[in-house]
Length: 238
Image (cartoon, rainbow, N blue to C red):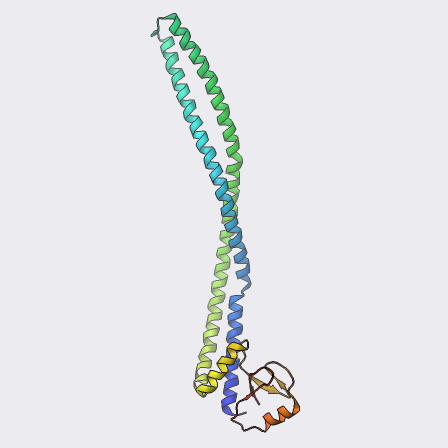
């Protein structure tokens, strides 16, 4: 093994470690749980939005009924004040006002009963919104914890990746440009491994056994000759 190919294998080792670290970074287990929480949060928000619309409609209805009750009571009080204040002298007018007061009393009772029904409808909706708020707070708290864990793990892994890249750079700089370019092209095409050792009669990249004549040819080739695996195309270092 010449120094050039030995250096190429060292570059491959650093590249493999970088790939592994990046894979670990992308597949942190906390990311999966965080994605599940975010999906739960979105579903909860959608469900809560529907409940809130329904609740607001009921609350608006309640406010309308309250206004109608207040208006009817005000009218009733005004009539009673006039009736009992000596401001009406006609018996016919008094009878008409008394009849209106009775009607207003019934109307107020009806309105208050309807208002009570609306309030009873509001109660479970308010309860559902409160429960959703508690659930949302729990999700947000856990999601925040997970984001902190992910951020710390990313920081540590990024430091390791930077260290590997820093160690790789001077080694890659000493390789012949055409060899480095060929290696990097193979790496992209062959899942991250562009160069591998010849291990016995097998390629260390695809792990397939080479024919005996091919192995003999490789072993007797000039030290600086670039040899590739007939099976996978990777650069073979012997």
